[in-house]
Image 1 (cartoon, rainbow, N blue to C red):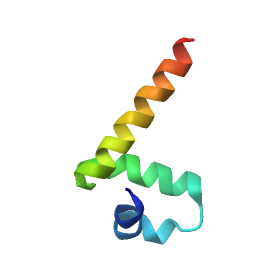
Image 2 (image 1 turned 90 degrees about the vertical axis):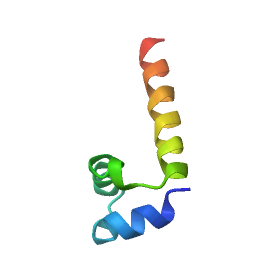
Image 3 (image 1 turned 30 degrees about the vertical axis):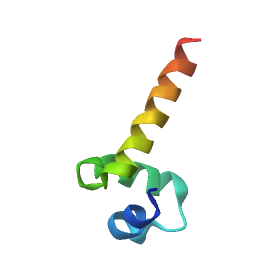
Image 4 (image 1 turned 180 degrees about the vertical axis):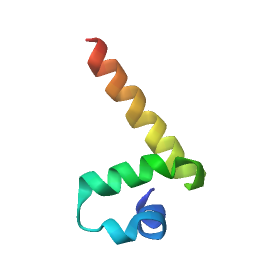
Length: 52
């Protein structure tokens, strides 16, 4: 869901995955609704794992 957004917003960071991830977080307001849903789901999963 986020490949197009990642290339559009953070293509200059390829192939560095940690830098792409940070770039996407910084540009969250500019990602597509589908990508934002994926990012929200992943953030919730990480929060839940941290609590356990």
